[in-house]
Picture 1 (spheres, rainbow, N blue to C red):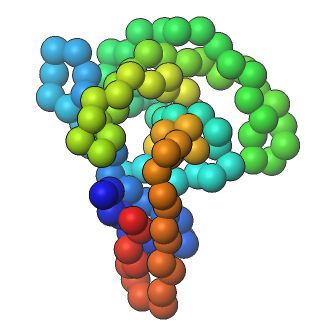
Picture 2 (cartoon, rainbow, N blue to C red):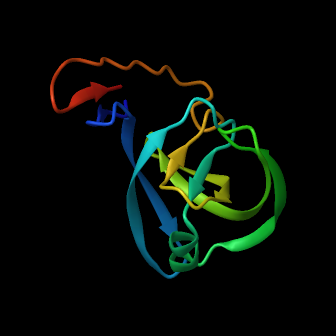
Picture 3 (cartoon, rainbow, N blue to C red):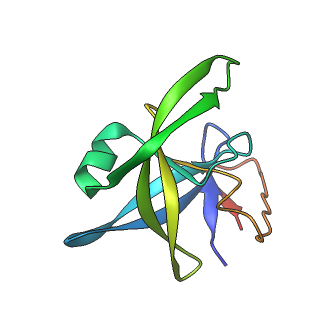
Length: 120
């Protein structure tokens, strides 16, 4: 089970560990984005630091309805104690977990009136 929190901006957030070649894994607090149908999105500086290899481009529809051509990289993520190879989308926002990474998982979000709530 992967647990997280609901932050003060009412975003469901979980920690995700990303292994990288020739260095220690990096852990990010990533927002669960049910409108993102990919696996993982990371900012450019994180992708450079992780030394991910380019894998191409994708045309994406953003949350505001606009379209953008975005870079994709070959990457890995430790998810539910398993190392998984995933395409990583370069995105100018913060780290995001998409619905493809959540495939075959259950998502439960308990939003309560506190500073932090649990996400499971």
